[in-house]
Amino acid sequence: MPECPELHLAGRFINRVCGALVFAGGVERSPVGRGPEVPFRSEAYGISAISRGKELRLTLSALDPAAGPPPQDLVFRFGMSGSFRLCPAAELPRHAHLRFLTRESPPRALCFVDPRRFGSWRLGDAWQPERGPCVISEYQAFRENVLKNLDDRAFDKPICEVLLNQKYFNGIGNYLRAEILYRLKIPPFEKARTVLEALQEQEKMKKDPSLTLSKNVKLRQENPDLLELCHTVPTEVITAELLDPEQSDNYAAFKNWLQCYLVPGMSSLRDRSGRTIWFQGEPGPMAPKGQRPRKASRKKSPELKTEPEAEPSPKVTPRASKQRRRAAVKPPKSELKEEEKEEEADGPRKGHGRGRRKATAAPALPEVPLGVRRSCRISACRGKGEAGSPCGFGAHVQPLLCERHLLPPPEGQVRGQEELRQGLATDQG
DNA sequence: CGTCCACGTCTAC
DNA sequence: TAGACCTGGACGG
Image (cartoon, rainbow, N blue to C red; front, side):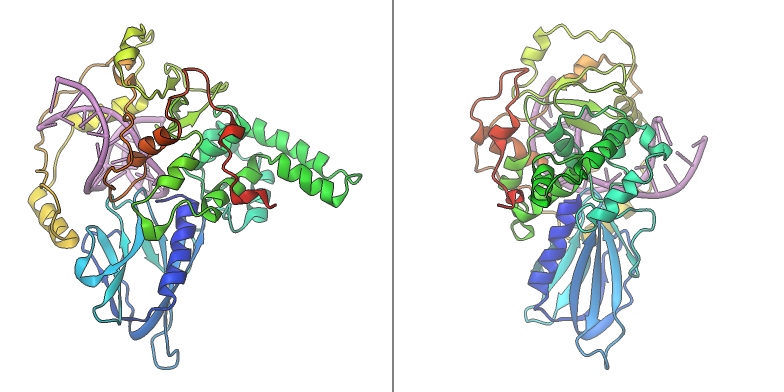
């Protein structure tokens, strides 16, 4: 669960739940984990955590500093699927790549779980130097870092792409960028510098000395700018406790909170790095060409078919071509070995084993009209009792949204922001 | 069964 | 600026 709210909540979880626990022994690492062995061993140690943007630092400290080893720091990134869980050491979840064992009997394990293994850890206390200040915990520094560097070529890009640049927006990810831009109805492919320079102007107005302090505060709260939202939107997720690491199978509140990302009725496009940006309204001047905004509808393709959608340009989306190529070029390297290792590392599979795909020489297809891929893959309403999936909230989003909004919004008409306001803890009164 | 898609970086043309 | 790196859920045939 990997944008700054998830990292922050993971840290809070570790401090609250593990703060009272005593850990013992060495740190276990699965052979496929994307990080080094941890050279730390103590017969009684504690674990504390702190997050910064999309990184999380753990500190292992012997309870008796005089007798034990010196403290060991570790900095994690969660990739697309990383998380921390505390569970009985005898029932490790699959993909628990790093484990800290408690001294209890029976012991439990604090696990870094990461099915896709895009996450990693490094030894030492250093944050990744290229990453900017945290949008949550270092708001002022974050803001200044952006506004002082608007001449950087990085801001030549569309705002939606710049929001993923961790040098300036450490902690923002794909769902947050959509939610933030949506609150201000900023076209995602407006040039970043244009958006942010305008913000500098507003800055001056807000510093108008004729305003009383309280009026100024009110003005700011009622008219948050883009950079403020980069702080308050993720903070909403945290303070409203939408994502509870102890209830990792319950994404109900979070799904309910999303106003734009994955929401039926919203449009989406691929940005220049192939990531899906969700938005409402105009895409903006720098929108990639050859792609038409796609409406996410609750229903699946049949009605889309009726719409004549012959793609005028033969252009293929980057993603499409990418995936086709991957399918075609599939040289599995020494599979058996990998499979065994994974088996050992991640424990027995729960369900039906899915045999590895053979390298079927799927021929590289010629370009396919976009319309073919255009159909909405968001599932239809399924009601609540759906079994929880081990990771990812995407699969859960739809049912809940449908619960709340029993009817889909008519095409083209989207719920107003106010209607959706959740009265979350950002109001400060 | 196969294809598409996912909360993120990295590095190699 | 494409891939590469991965697993697994949803969906279509």
